[in-house]
Length: 198
Image 1 (cartoon, helix red, strand yellow):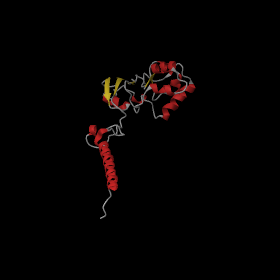
Image 2 (tube, rainbow, N blue to C red; image 1 turned 180 degrees about the horizontal axis):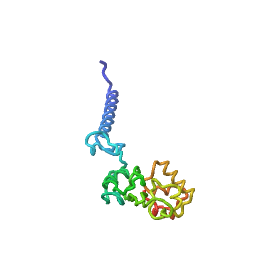
Image 3 (tube, helix red, strand yellow; image 1 turned 90 degrees about the vertical axis):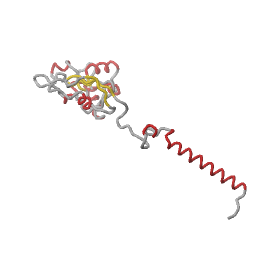
Image 4 (cartoon, rainbow, N blue to C red; image 1 turned 45 degrees about the vertical axis):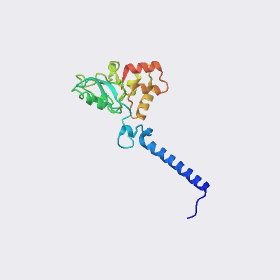
């Protein structure tokens, strides 16, 4: 085997040191010194390399009222739906009209869910029906164009825009999302907050 010159030994030594440094840095990254791209590090997870939070964040606290067996304030995992909150509150009573609220809507922190009551005639107290349209909150998930048009500051065009906006997103979890619609300003948002429920 031919002998290496002094300059060749220095070059090979420098390459070997560079490779060792690159390898040590790569091993350090895998060891948990930096968080992964999925928001969790092995130091926290303790097993697999990463965890994905499919729930959409931390817990949410919601107020469930109306025709449920145990009205109250409940903490639920992020990403929960209105149906989860109603079930946590014991489910609907015999007078509950669960078809008048959007059970599939995603919960948001601080939200109030009001389950309307069926009156003796079999209709919801809080739903539309002639003069009774102004008597109670309107469900954002099931509101018709006529119901929305009855709200101060909302005309037929804006009512249809709200319905289109809701349908494009597969439902809305918060009244605050309506401020994204063109033509809805602060005064209209205040009227919507008073008349609508998520």
